[in-house]
Image 1 (cartoon, helix red, strand yellow):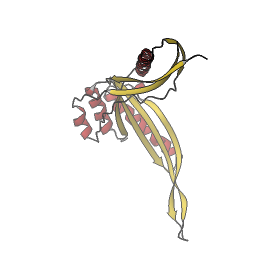
Image 2 (cartoon, rainbow, N blue to C red; image 1 turned 180 degrees about the horizontal axis):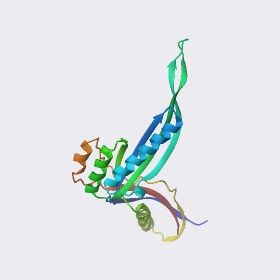
Image 3 (spheres, rainbow, N blue to C red; image 1 turned 90 degrees about the vertical axis):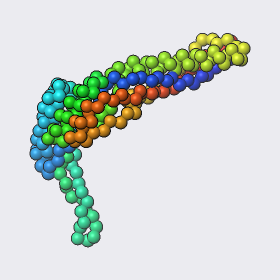
Amino acid sequence: MNRTITVKSTGKVSVKPDYISINLKLAAKDCDYGKTMNLAEKQLEELRKSLEKAGVNRDGLKTCDFNVNAEYKSVNDKRGGYSREFDGYCCRHSLKVEFGLDMKKLGAVLGSVSSCTAKPEFKIKFTVKNKDAVAEKLLESAAAEARKKAETLCKASEVKLGQLISIDYNRVELDIYSPTVYSAVDSGAVRCANIEIEPENIDLTDAVTFVWEID
């Protein structure tokens, strides 16, 4: 039976954000389905026009999620209980706008969004454009660390590191976002957005298990 050594390694990388992601949410509601959809379409067009003023092309506004649901509310009945009553149709539209790390452009975009009559909710995140490259660096770090640990253990045990037998890796979705929180509300967003800030680096870890033969 071949002797083996198993090493679990955690790769680590720290990257500087170079991209801004703004998540926007619109909500339209009416008891009539057709009116709800017309209102949702009007809100979307208003948002597009507002963003165009900040230099965002119409195709730069991407849909993340779109759903229309019938909503109900609980009401007291004559017997002291509760019953469900139709409360209208609600159309929720989740969108995003992304661009390079440019605080002046962010200020222009937030200024347009805050003055938009559709009144979208928004959340700002700092990330990186090339997420695949970050994931690759993370795995390279894990592999290098594992090899170093294996060689150190073999040297201490007076054995020789042999062929790599297997790699066990369960890929998880990486949360590649800076911990920096950027909040702005209504007209105050215009003033706050012009402040130059430096988002915190994005620190990531990922684990991989390697198995080698030992001689």
